[in-house]
Length: 302
Image 1 (cartoon, rainbow, N blue to C red):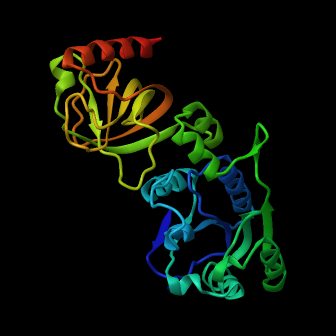
Image 2: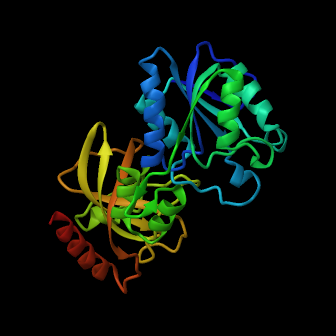
């Protein structure tokens, strides 16, 4: 995959099928959109994803920086899916003020050689978001590229959207989040040294510090699995600041892996969060914490 970031001065070298969107979460709706551009690869077009960095809602102060997927996670997912070009178009006050038709003619047609464009029914582009699906269809006819507008996918009567996933995530409904995304919600990071309390009480854990721009579910204990070196290990994870043993307000993800004994400091792992078990709490002693951890681990086995 060729990544183009931090510049408006680029030109792709082949006709492309382009998917436009924010792609926060890369959920089932986004995946349906991606399937349309991948089908065009069979017709000789290259696949390209166009997204803004940062998203318009962040640039104009309508949303926080934390996302369902970080920039690095999006890159890994798009590469794994088989995208040929990923455009992270720098969004500034100047580029955001581009007229909608100029965006289509200069960026999609001239720079990306778009022969096919897929976008959601709620797509907006150009100055103050004045470009929409109807204008994209009209400009496609004018400039000679095909346009596919994708309707929202519904699940149990509700449209799948990043906003809905955020709502479910912030309530700790991990099974619902997985159903909306199509895979478990995950946190990826490098294993760091912790206080090694788990090791002293016979329950060694692995610790990672989540990226600062990653949206996390409520602090608490989760049934999970950990992906490491191409394998998946059953686990139970705690998200939070471990108030029983630490006064530091440092957010971490600590996981106990079943049937695992390797030392993997400095290695990258992905913690897949499956189900919320209980909120994080402060225990009156380390012994009480140990007793609860043992109960959590035993329940996790089931």
